[in-house]
Length: 397
Image (tube, rainbow, N blue to C red; front, top):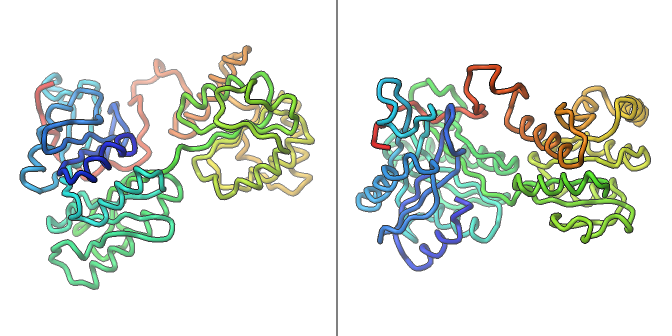
């Protein structure tokens, strides 16, 4: 929804009804991640995408139906060996798409979710996508210190105390996922307890975290850093370069960086604790102990997503010994990716940046780092459970 938030907010402000189709589950070689969205307004205008083209037509029709009926729907689009081309997703993937009608002013949670997302305020929109019919489509919008909407507002055929307990659990789960910047599904019992997806009497909640771009902080204004900055920005990170040497840390040398900071690396990191999270990537390229050790002593104790450090094997061994001397445990040191990057045989700055980026993506997505040609399994890794199983919907490509 983040990619189309400005247009949704404009539709909402004008009082126009619309429907939003959101990818809530993926499996196999599906073309888009959870959170990808397509929206259609009451006049038929469409924005966004859920599949890159292969199921857009049917999803467009589902959005129009949802606007007309006011009823949300969860559909699965998948691959059939018997009739591969009839189902559209001939890549072999499966998409679960939740289509929700939106009437401006009718649901405080949806209203708040759209407004917060359009303004850039971090928010998690939690929607029940499967469960008792009376609850499907119910939503809460959760920020760091507040939430909007209520599950009890839905005409649920459940006692109020049960609904309130479920709402508390949904808010807690959504806030935790917002803190981590994570989007995905959560399965809960009707009273809010965590449970197995195969249990009876459950609800499936799709939590969509809309947060600022993840951060990449590159420490060390060396020639290799410029290439890492470029590829980091290409991957969607908000990229900062930090170096204590003003002659090297200049915007002219790093035009692709969002910001260039002149400061001691450890001191700058200390000043950023409220702006880093589990998605943050730290690339330490200085390979100089006076910069590296104070920085890594802090970085390896922070809940960031990735910490990598450049240097030779000898530098790596010396660095680890120094980190132990300052009190880091073996478990903390094991978080360090050093020497940074995958073994691609890289030599140039650009090749090295590809090596670093490949390791970051593999670490984030759970990749094996083996050539795809050596295996016969799926080429995309499933990091979250797929929404409740439904029979794939065949349709024309």
